[in-house]
Length: 207
Image 1 (cartoon, rainbow, N blue to C red):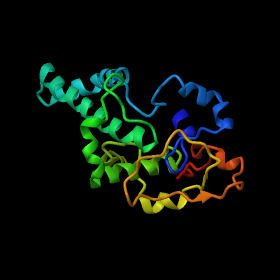
Image 2 (image 1 turned 60 degrees about the vertical axis):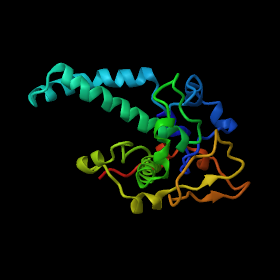
Image 3 (image 1 turned 60 degrees about the horizontal axis):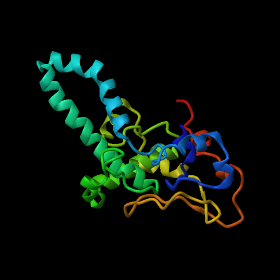
């Protein structure tokens, strides 16, 4: 929730004085990745949370415990590697280092591929729609299966304008060429609403 509140529609993270005085901003200060990366502790916790559902399913498929772990553990590691390669840099933060979590560098070569552009753009839509669609970052096919996918042509119409130089950021997003760009508000024209998180203002209406 705090990460969504800190994110503009151009994927940069706000750092203006008004935002920095909020409890949400303060809650992110203890994390060097500001809630954008999977630390080793988070990856481990997610892996443990997977066991109650993964073990019975794999057992029904005829897998033993060791065979299940041989599939699950590498899968969770690859997921963390993809996430940490994409997510912090797309929000203007430094790459993840090994001492924090699955490092960004092993998969940096993917940033010049159509796959990277697709998952980047898909996650843009997640933020533009207030975190109410396009949930799966690394495996977006899941959203298609569950009916939570919203195509770019739909969500791009809802991109909010973002403050220009007066809206201080944590960094410049690392983005591929050709992704949708949020309109820029002229200097001195930004209102209080413009500094209000999209997650609160721009969520889709109930069906």
